Length: 123
Image 1: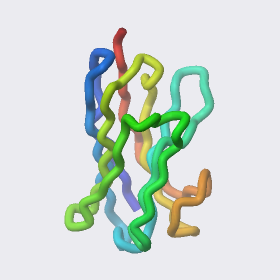
Image 2: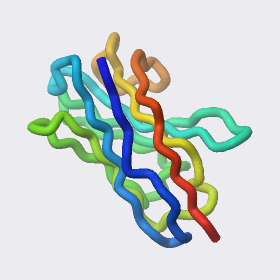
Image 3: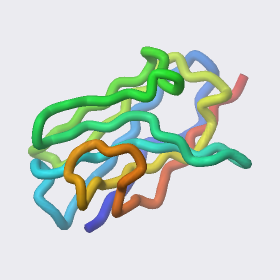
Image 4: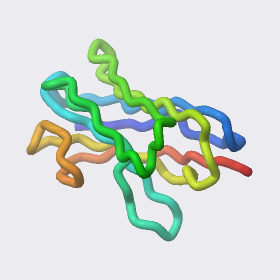
């Protein structure tokens, strides 16, 4: 299993970024993939999740607040996180993770992680 998160960078507050999570080594349509983030000195927190088996999407409202959109392209085995209206508090390393055992979005019950991509939002 491999998960590669890309698309991070430096953006000004109010700007947008689209993160990509390219997946391989498993049947993409059978599993859920989630986005998480970890800011310096803080615990990792969930952001969003998309479940390919049933098409269900979850957002952590306290984090996303209507600004982020998760989507997937099953033909490309890729999950995206479109982030708009970015704020300095969104600065973190963003990770994608696979729900290998549960196959559906189940909180922190992830099994495989990508290497993360840094998102920095300047004020």
